[in-house]
Structures are given as structure tokens and as C-alpha cells.
Image (cartoon, rainbow, N blue to C red; front, side, top):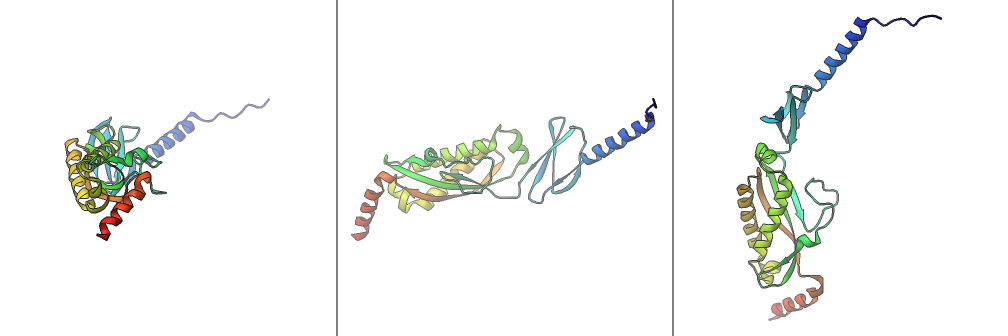
Length: 213
């Protein structure tokens, strides 16, 4: 019975070395996109942030890179969800409880709003708060409830929208700084603001009567 030819040990070793070199080379370079910054960890500890472009890192898990969209404006929607919009901190379903609020005169209002923000401190964003995106959602909702709770239902639904946006923005900026989220809140924009469906007709009648005076 003919014997199988032996593969030289040097050939096997040579192939292994070539494959290893290719793997090391492949995992030693990474690209940071134009709208982002890279946060580099070495042995699990913060090392540096890097600008967009092609960069070198130590392979085999020695260096790890997290890319954050620091130059892109991000948004969170409250009380509604735009179809097709992707944000890992955006719930997939509309938040009925999220938009249900109580005004200062103890009336109910359904408030939908958008928060626009940027990641302005990547290190702080990744390491100072366990879940910065969810924390931003929580403090944004708390700030809006606080502002709505200081105003009458008429101010909330009709005449006070701009004032609410300004006050909510200031409060969210204050909280984001206090809790060191690493984000800058740029804008708060109210969307649909209405009374609950069961009192919508009565509210419209009151408004019409006031306008007819």
C-alpha cells in the first residue's frame, strides 16, 4: 500500500507564519469615518481619542476601538417614533406613558417632542455613565415633565410652546452637565401637543368661544 507523502514541517510552519502575519496586519488597522471620533482602549483602559482617517492599533485585543458619531447631530423622539429612524436609544414603539403629562393646573396633556444633541466628550460619554443614551432619555423626560408641570394647560397646548422649548432646553443642558453625560443638548422641539382624546371636543369648544369674543 503506497504511503501518503509527508508534508515538510517547514512548509507547515511557513504557511502558519504567513497566515499569522496576514491576520495581524488585517487586525492592526482601522478606519474612523468622517463624522466620528475613535476612542482607543489598551488592555481595557482609556488611551486616547483619534480623528477621522486610517489608524494603527495593536492587534489580538490589546487595543480596542469604539467609534462614536461626534460630528453628527443625533436626536431622540418622545411620545412617537418616526418610521425608519435608527437610534439604539430610541424605543421601537410609541411611548403612550411618555407623552402623558399633568399640567400645573392639574389637567392632562399629550406632549410629543424631539431632543437634538451631539456627543461632545467621547471619553466622558463612554466611561462616566453606565448607559448615557438611556440616561439622557430619562433626564429629558423628567425635565419636560417639570416644565409642563409649571404651566397651565392653555400655555402648554396653545400660547406657551416656545417658552416651554426654551425652558426645557435649559433644564436638559443643566442636567446633562451635572451628570457628566458627555453630550451637548442643542435643541428641544415640541411636536404634537393636544388634550386627551376624551376631552378634545370640549377643549376645542372652549377655544372657539374665546376666539369668538
